[in-house]
Length: 248
Image (cartoon, rainbow, N blue to C red):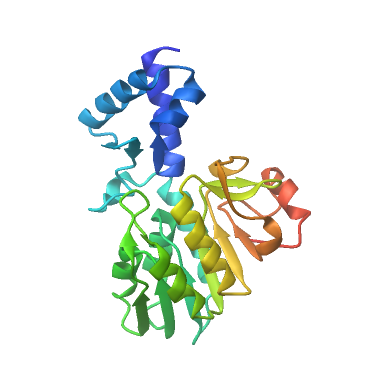
């Protein structure tokens, strides 16, 4: 594979999943990790991503927030707009992190009174701009890669709350394999979030459909709502329409 083709593949993966691991890319592209490290260095130097130990991060996902570099932003806004319909006056809401969740936070009506718990400092900063929201940031160790709070204290705090609805992003989405991720600590936090509610809403752009990461967060039998930018009757959602979930 030519270097230009490798770079295109790497950027596609980082746009979809916000982060990449050198070891995974080495296997997927069938090249050495040294080759991948050189590729990541070049892409970092050209300003296309942020190289970190063991891989790289999307610039749009990393603080400070690069608003003009959010991948598929219009699709994410459509997802967020649909999700807003599920939030009602007086609800207690729990959110994960990610660029789609930030779009959701921006779109919440300023007239809405509700309580929001979040594990994401970036989402909390958007939510606090809304005058009638009570915003509670669940603290812990800030993951440099995922940009959310993780660790035992976060999981313990989540076990003490019961919310009306939980909004989660996903790195991998597959009808058979469920919701998956590549970060063990993030998976544990998401599992704890799911336990805190009876209404779990997965938000994702459709490009992530049929993708699988190494670690399972949950199966779709634990999901109540699934939101993409697509029409619920779209052919790409056919395998999900057979499940006992509401597709928006």
